[in-house]
Length: 249
Image (cartoon, rainbow, N blue to C red; front, side, top):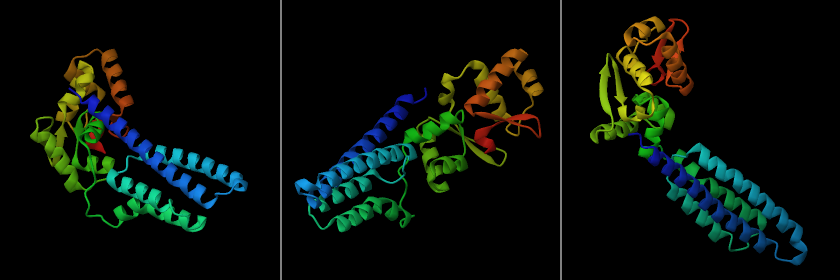
């Protein structure tokens, strides 16, 4: 059975992380503004600062959530608390702001300067990619989708094989990882077409599929359309054949 709950939990965790970081950074901006503009006549500056902080951090939360950073959350958390601590002391708006921006960017800078550090890839992220491609993955595909190197991609996929969630298969000179449980939500017709395209990974024409499945032309076309819409298969205009995207990409 597809681990839909794991993916949902991953999304909820990332959303919670974005909210936590935004709150800490907002407090950091709040102290920076209040400490550097303490007088009653500085009300306009404070209001502008609060509004800027709100919109900037709302944007930051969305970026953090949607980009799915592969940087450990701990790094972001340390950076956020560091800016909060620094902004408890009024060093001048320019210095406080400069230090805040530098520390804010430090997780990204540190990550770029530390290519040897392994990315944090959760099982749910791999399953999410597997669902996207109908349960047929390769190391190259995981590398492309999750922005990790081939060594880590192989490590992630082999773990699923170890626990019986995936099957490692050799198709000619291609090594694929089949997640049959991922396809439980698909119809019988969809599953049968995927299995056929997996056995004939170089591609099959509509006529070949019609003959192999024994489906009516209406059933076959409906199934092919569904699988194309989901992005699981693709139609090659040159060869006039259908292929699995997980292998073709």
